[in-house]
Image (cartoon, rainbow, N blue to C red; front, side, top):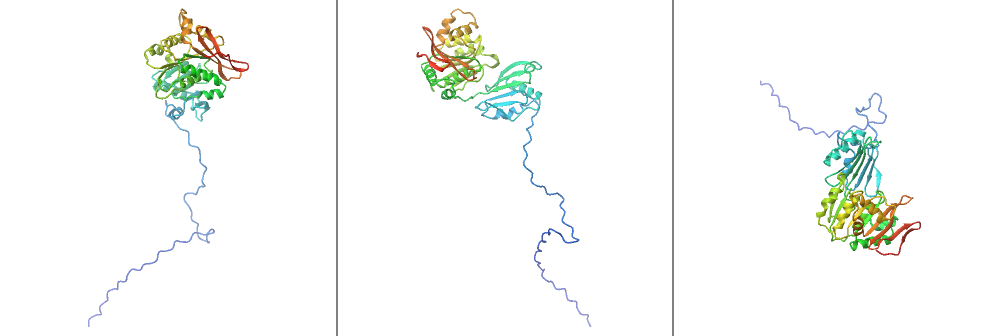
Length: 366
């Protein structure tokens, strides 16, 4: 007899078990004998946002000035030592939330600015130094020991916005009649001279006069520093900077332009500026920095005499200065037009003057 054959094992289909349900969340109080789940990284509560870390700068960089110079709206930057920086964005200087870490850092930034302007800042030598950047930006630095509180730095950029003449009227700088008289003088191509101390708003009045020039005329300016608000696209701008205006005045005789504007003249430069205006057909504007408490004509003659011989000086002044605006500051510190005069064949005639009762017209006409 044959042994019984073993039957092969039966193949059963695989059983598909339903997915296991995730274990229920641990109860607040785990059962006895069961260890609670421990987290390797502790859970932190949300923290309040913190201010970003101050921007660091490489040695020799411009420090906090870099971002300010990249901002189109910045017109002027003033550093009074490393920890006091002010910025003018068109409404006057206001404090900036920035500073240099140390005085040497500010000194390095000043040196780099002068290097960018193609000039060298003398080391370990105090004094006042000026330079002009390729784009016309004017840089002035006063270095220790002349500057006691650390380096003093001014950066003035081009593109200063014009202040409307009506705004100056509302501020009390001049009256509406004065403004109309000056605009009429520009329209008929009279040479207008604006004379006053450096802090009396001479450039503001010069800018108002420039804005009255007809839009079809081209303007050339010669400035000690970029102060005048100019019309875009029709102006030739020359800035003297550290070299002063003497060289520019000599070279500007060949510039072909409809109007010539000279601003920031003082001392010996006045005679050269008058000679240059005398070669033009009229309509020039001249801004002079000088204290002028007395009769305007005598002041102009005295200032012009500083430039050389006095021969024919009175005739030169009389031929160039048609209308003279004298600026000043009152006891309250407000800058204003002290007087407007006309110089003609009969000499000096006062058109407007500022007295104890304010601005008064003399009844004369330009």
